[in-house]
Length: 612
Image (cartoon, rainbow, N blue to C red):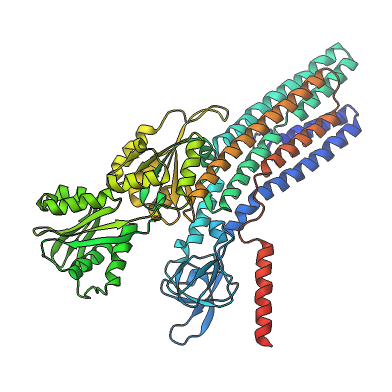
């Protein structure tokens, strides 16, 4: 088949060696070549399958059916998950997978999210909590879940798409090894032909000896060790990160992770929890009551995906502020890096930061006391916002605070100690930016505040270098951008490696090269270290394979090598480098078979007890 495709690969090389041995009447050598090559084919298939197995398990993770509740009769029908619609109610029994993303409307249980996040600890979930498709109900009670996303848009489907994409995005090193094998093999065959033909003019014995040497060169020059171990190593690295809840889009980005020397973090939702708390709310000028200001804030922020929006909506709910059903909202839109605007009941309303209201000319109309209050809130590390009506002016101001992720300081310190420069870019004011930076340990000179999306993009572009090209052994200086929002999408796309938090906006997830499914920054450090280990392992395999081949070639020309020893050494090297690559494979994958069996046994025992 390879010859028909005008290719000459390792299969052809081994057949040539076996036929040459038969022609020389070296039948033992011919049989040995065939037998050991069959073993190498078996080992190649086994290593490749094992390297892909963990990724395939993730692809097969989505449930195929659901227990749909008829909301009129209460009857339960088993349906394909593809038939579920948003708003449907599904019954999730003990041990069942949740078919799609949703919210618990009845029941309290424990959910195993290891299939998505890699964390083995089960989480308590109660009514009102969100749950993700593909996770498992490991508690002792059933739950009823209202579906909030179609199966194709669920977390597990998004994970599967990312994993499938990772299988097709090959690294430069993999492509280089394949290209080298394609050009190198014909050259070796040409040399071997010369060695097997010209010496016959100098006598039969000389011809036999050099023909045998030519066959040995054909065997030992086979690039199997590199062409097998390299993709196995990358597949093992991708599987290791995937099972920790980190999806890397292919070997190219996994290799890039190992060469990152600069990291830019967004603040809100990346270095911080993204869970704001309303600290203070002041009405201005007596133009609107507090409840009316909260009502307008809830109307304006309801459609927004920014983490701060949910805080303002919840603040209105906490004070029993209701939005009138006849409220008219038109032309709601996001002002990137500034806030939101809409026409509410015929009035043009804005909610946003200081920069927005300075641009609108409303900030200058505030009293000195109100400006001083805003500055004080900012200096205390809070995020300051305003709400105003065109033609009326600012009607309220508020401050919200967000806490740094508990693991952020340790991760930032580790990155800096490893020689990686860390930066922070944020659209927030200098007060909250400086406060969070000091808390997590980012140097003050590496912090930029009040940045719009285009400012972030320009800053990323200014830090990019031309050292991204080169061989595996050359030093690279790559830049990573880590963010979670729509505002971060341009910068994520421009960076050498874009990392999105799994709880972030869908656009950021689609554009990014790496996704942290549970938004845990410790997984970011793990993925960088895995990238470094992959690069180191591939270098070890290349150096070992080349060194072994040089030694055999030298022994061949010294007359100390046989065809049997050559094929044995080739298979041995291939086995060693493949095992070296497979050492990156994780010990288990998501919810392991043993744990799944344990859950099933517990559920069966519970069912037996109930029957008794």
